Image 1: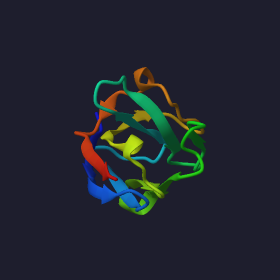
Image 2 (image 1 turned 45 degrees about the vertical axis):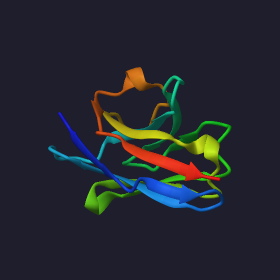
Image 3 (image 1 turned 135 degrees about the vertical axis):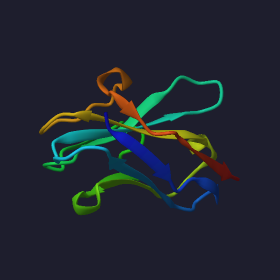
Image 4 (image 1 turned 120 degrees about the horizontal axis):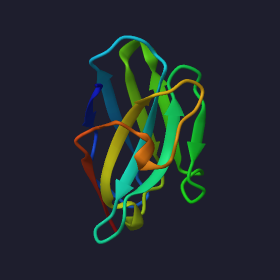
Length: 125
């Protein structure tokens, strides 16, 4: 089982940017995938981006691909979601999730085994 510790949420003004972090621990090896998800108030959870840690494979939801960037610092076992040009519709609880996988990643939550605690992002207009 992997442990995921998230940080980086908060209140941001519209048009601003922020970076969410997801530190992965509890295992050895680099062949895992991390997905980023969000759940806005009253809405279902949605997959927004993912990255394969070992080879850097990335996928993005079409609606966010111009503003969201995922990256990894493999030596620190930390993954990042950088968001620019935030708007109030980005207000949500953001989660990272991990699964053992090489060369792929997924935008569907059921593919992942371990989840971070979530972090809240609020975008003020």
